[in-house]
Amino acid sequence: MDEVFKALADASRRRLLDSLNARNGQTLRELCAGLDMTRQSVSKHLAVLESANLVTPVWRGREKLHHLNAAPINAITERWISQYHRERVHALADLKRALEESPMSDLEFVYTNYIRTTPERLWQGLTDPAFTRRYWGVTFESDWTVGSAMAWSVNGITITDPGQVVLESDPYRRLSFTWHAITPEFAKAYEMGDELLARMAAEPRSKVTFEIEPRGEMVKLTVTHDGFEPGSAIREGVQHGWPELLSGLKTLLETGDTLTGTEADQAG
Image (cartoon, rainbow, N blue to C red; front, side, top):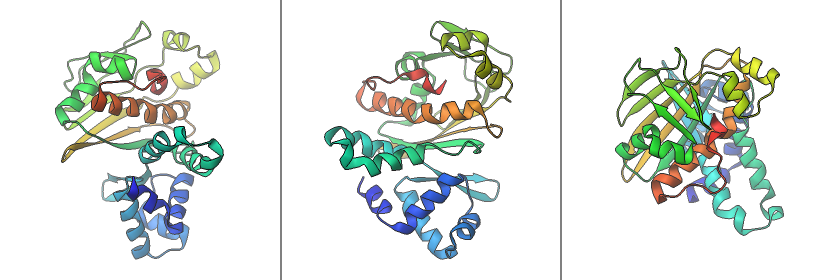
């Protein structure tokens, strides 16, 4: 947590976060041009932000894209907000909202978290129904091999679809699958209006990728949800659900408990 406060203490680094909040997924060149800062200066500041886990780098071919990561801000609020009056942490709350509320034009969501567990246990947390129902409120039926179908069961409703499949499966390292279909049954379960249902159902299928990297006693989990079109209603919905859902996963794996009040379906 000290690294996070140190990173946020510098005005130039806060400008970089502001720039990424305005347009996520920028290259080093784009950040330099937008902020009128030298390449060397931006590189040094990005290194500090990456070390503090406030920025997550994602490689797309030869390009290195930089994304905001809300995990450290969530950790700060969980540690401090409950102990002090809102007025005394108003600026921190504003920063948390700014980092979590990425622009609607973003075509992907990237989130990084560090969990005190093992790659095997984390894989189980992502695939085993006994785990997923506790923090996600969802259970999966799949053999987790590439090309296999996935059935999502949520709130007593099972969602199946030919396009709902496992895309990549490298146990304890990488898992990717297509997002579930937006069905009338799903919409009814969550009291979704006809207009929103029509918008979401008309969107192209998105996908989710989990990357698992051992880091000593910790495991680094990077979640990328992409494949959205500009103005995506699904993107708008999942951007708020993923941070809370993954906080629930972290809490479950590290303590055996679930977050009080977490509605696991929020990323659904």
